[in-house]
Figure 1 (tube, rainbow, N blue to C red):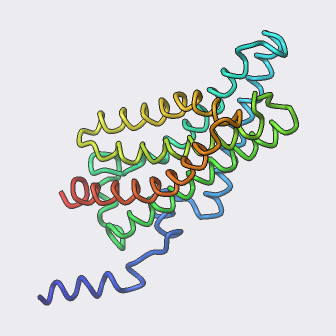
Figure 2: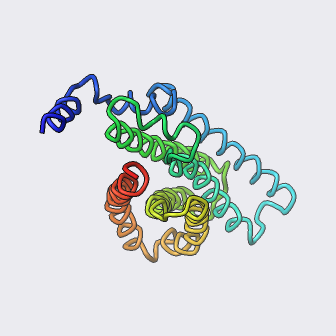
Length: 238
């Protein structure tokens, strides 16, 4: 009982319970400001690549090639998903470099939980920056998406949905299967959603768009909670 009481006191001690910002820095070495700047910078760089690609494609195939809009939309979604995947897949299991060390940092599992929450916020920030840039470029006709800004809005909700699916895939037990499945799920979900985007971007299925926003609002916190609980049971305590 004494040992248990001491552990409770340690967990309630503010010195042993880092803030979300501190937890992120413990695991990644990045301060919150640096994290925000880095995330925004990566999103901007990736988007710049998309603009250059689309510009080159347009020059090679002509301004109004019939298939260009599909290629652009696939690339925009796939690039955003590729940005989100590395952060979504960072779980710091025991077998990864530093995995055992992170079990000894102040706050223990609570620090890991806060780090993952902060990293999720960072991922959502990257997606937001990426698609805000895409929407601005579409509005200025720098990125000639078929449905313009609406395509970017649809891409954003689909990419967030892919992140939620990626979180759930992290509950798979075998490491290589877990990472491969989560990565492929995020990529495939983004690309397959193009057909849905084509429909509700045109205005025929606006209800589907609203449903997806609500689904994302439920899926993100739920999938995060499922992943955290599974991680503690199968990777932290064992």
